[in-house]
Image (spheres, helix red, strand yellow):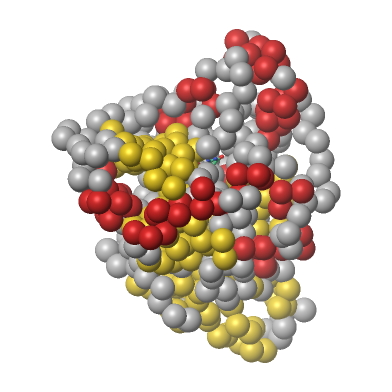
Length: 405
Ligand SMILES: Nc1nc2c(c(=O)[nH]1)N[C@H]1C(S)=C(S)[C@@H](COP(=O)(O)O)O[C@H]1N2
Ligand SMILES: [Mo]
């Protein structure tokens, strides 16, 4: 159980599911929201999976809302790759109509900011080249529930993350085929294929993200996830994947990929996903949620354990860097033991399951884990307090309290 109490219901913001209920309620309601003080709206409770994710395994999931579904901590166990049916879902806007996946090969993406810009269909991309990469997909707000100030947004604990295998064409290959980057470009910008309701300023709600140009070296245009055609829920027919970068940069149903001189002016970039002190508004001069930091958490046991030998499981990753070491403490960080990394090493962007075998006698244990990446960066003890509850990798909050009877 988390040590900190759950904060109260957050105020309405762009990435709060309740606001999207309003989106469906009509343009008037949304337009009004933009101008007026934020009005509290009751959040519809959800007890079954919405249709678009009805194929998922409900017992592995926590339903925060229609567009925000978290993986249960215990569902990961010692998992190398997160099964698609167990993977979290996070939509800033309702997903496009499922019919976009009737003929996925016909989906078109505009490639801009290259010397020979053009539209390419998924069928054409599939003939260019193919590779696979394992990468952790993690929402910037994973761990937000542990912030005592009540950071607004979905109250994720540890389950807005999974490790998945993406298959698609290296973006670098596509760019080279189209004559290479145009002069002066500095960012890689991806645009989501959602419909923007009429009457709204697209900039206010569109999912369009920019990352530094260097990300183009490792990015993928992916049409498969975990060896299956990419489902609508995870961005099918085509997704821009930026390995090692926070979830939001991995644009689903991508319809445009542009090398640009400037970052996009979409609100999700200019004021959204920016790190700032509690109480401060978002602005473009603050750090953007790009590369992920080193992080780990225990996945088993969660509440109770047996007397005698136990295996403590968890997962650890280093964003764009390999994990070098994971330590586990059974006494809330007083003393540490090295855990063993298990399973195949799927590369720097993947997570590594870890295990520690230990004897436990009756009592209460505060079990925490601390990962260190190959550059020597270790998880800090504390969270870094910030308005929206982003990039939490503090080991203390992420521990579990386990009773051995
Ligand atoms: N087009 C589009 N891409 C998107 C989003 C979105 O709402 N629309 N949400 C982003 C966010 S905030 C996250 S955390 C991840 C979640 O990916 P998943 O739903 O496949 O788990 O997708 C990102 N890509
Ligand atoms: Mo996210």
